[in-house]
Image (cartoon, rainbow, N blue to C red; front, side, top):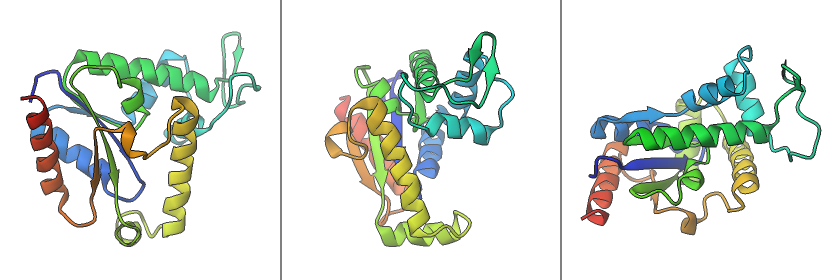
Length: 200
């Protein structure tokens, strides 16, 4: 695999996408960036006193620039910071991290932000409802399939709004993997093999 390869991962909630990203980063001996991006982006905007949960809410709320800013925070001469502000700040952070070297980036619309970057591979991770429902009970503190799907709807709205593309649509990604019928370790190996073949 080339030294400056960047892998971006988007995923359905409950399919094991975060764990897969962790395995990939470990196998490749590169950094994994996830919620750190949110905190760095917030700091760039001067937002320093919100909890991680509030930052994630701000990040995930679709709000056109023309509407009134969200009343979560005030700093300087600005009253609040819009979701769009967070999106743009996160996009800037994603580009910087990707330019700094090989890494794995989870979520944050990074596949879209880096779509024109050489040696960038975008992956969408999904799973069957039965598999996700089982993981909801065992891994996600008893969440129901309905709750998992509601989170997916939020992710889709956010992605669709800011990218103009459809979340999870195959043509938006280099590779789509289904985690239902193989171990995450084997899937990670297959992803690495795929990238190596493409880069030959």
